[in-house]
Amino acid sequence: MKLTSRYEQTSCRLVVEGLPDLSAGQDSGTIGIVTGFSMGLAGHTELEGQREHLQALLAAVIPYARHLLSGVPRAFGAADAPVAIEPSQGRHQLELRSSQPDTPALQVQLDDAELSDLVRCLDQVRLDQRLAIPFELPELHPLSRKELRHRQPLLRRLAAPVAGVAALLLSAALVSLAPTPKPPGSAPASPSSTK
Amino acid sequence: MADAPAPLQTPLSRRGIERLDLMLLCAEALDLNGGEAMVWLSEEMGFRDLFPNRVELWKRRCSNPLRRNTRRAALKPEETDALIRILNALAERLYPMLRTLLSSAEPPELNQQRWDLFRSRLKELVQERLNPRRGGVQRLLDPQEGAELSRELVQAMALSAGEGGFERLRASLLDAAV
Image 1 (cartoon, rainbow over the protein chains, first blue to last red):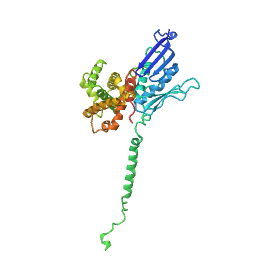
Image 2 (cartoon, rainbow over the protein chains, first blue to last red):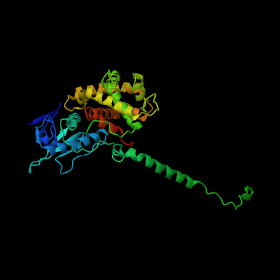
Image 3 (tube, one colour):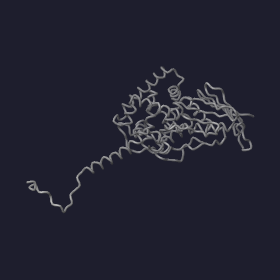
Image 4 (cartoon, each protein chain N blue to C red):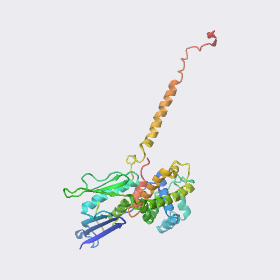
């Protein structure tokens, strides 16, 4: 008996179909084997895929949302992965690559609201207790200083070191202008010597 | 991946507390009863031990270094976790509004009016509660930079709503200081 789980938001609908893995002792209401997955995005035709497509969608979109939340959006999804996402002119370009040869990749431009809807649907999928599928996802961890360095504009990042070097050069120039002290052995010039 | 607190019990940095309080301030700007909703949610979610009354909740929020009357006492990780959970619940309640603001499918003039209303309420709250001498507050009040910052805050709230939002927001608030 086939089971179906639906996850819906305003502009996004995900449907996961599957069967319980009875050999693993799962109950009849749990999906342990995914037999199909479909995604409907507002304004686009419904897309169908397998478990690996759902996995690739999660692996690209969830870390993308994590970085976007920290203000450092960057591309996710390897060149040979079925799904990739990257920031594009204030929007988010989702690229869905077909496993069929000679089928061009589908590019979908999502605005911020549509991306949030997709992220919420994917969150529901990955946290659904009825889906006993071990999705491989990177841990949600705090970003390091190195990963966040793009958040500050280059000028602001360079301001402190440039100001430091400039201050050092200026003080060195001023010190070099000061008269060098005379050696202690030489007698001071007498005012009467000019007479 | 379960929506359970990670074993990591690191306190939030000052910047993390600043962002958290600014997002709570945005929730108040979006919902006129946002302040009351926070107190009610705190009780509903079982945080009475951490925040026995509205004054205690208010005092925790005053750890934001941008506040006029900022408190220097450090917040404990369980207190910041509770505040993040309250924000997560508020973002869930306000999600339709957040979504509308972020959507490009809405009529542009109508959405501009919504943004203007939100920004004017946020400005009032910022002027009332935050220290105008701080650079971060001046940037929020700046017509151009403030518009970008408030959009970033609304987007962050939208990505913090829902089941996975708590974990994601907490990880983001624990980011290294730049």
